[in-house]
Image: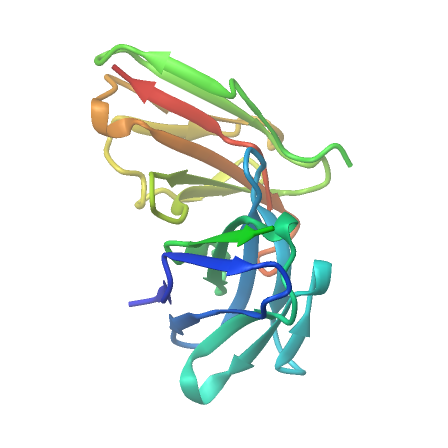
Length: 113
Length: 113
């Protein structure tokens, strides 16, 4: 069955620390992978996406993710977090004719100023 | 581009009542998706439309749930005979194709007393 799992439920970091959020997927066939972010009180917004090509994907606000096919992973990274990065982060997989997304449970990131 | 809008933003109802939510997608998007998000979970796919055709509805949670998109523009999601377990955030997303980015609305938060 298709599934997406996120390793961390809640991550707490100090400003300027580096961030890596884990995401693993279980998929057959073509896989499209996404990271969405939900800031407090706001709707889901796309951070970045991977469809094909260069496995290192750069997104908005300094975020990047690397698709590693052999590990079925699509981890999100940022070299130096800011207080404004406090949010919940969702990894999602999609594909096929339906195109619906399958989400992980999310990781809440709290950045201490 | 005014984004995806959803109304109402909050709905409080008593158990057994019917509720209807509306989603207005981005105007040129022909695909529209409904998701449900409960506390501590990522969004869960419910159903989707391509134009006015509902192409997948087996994921609707029960026969109390139904959705329409009569003219291929806005969509409604109805829940009949609400139960306390229906309390959740109901999200709508739209996109142009099955592989494009899905843009999410702010959601309708349903509370069933």
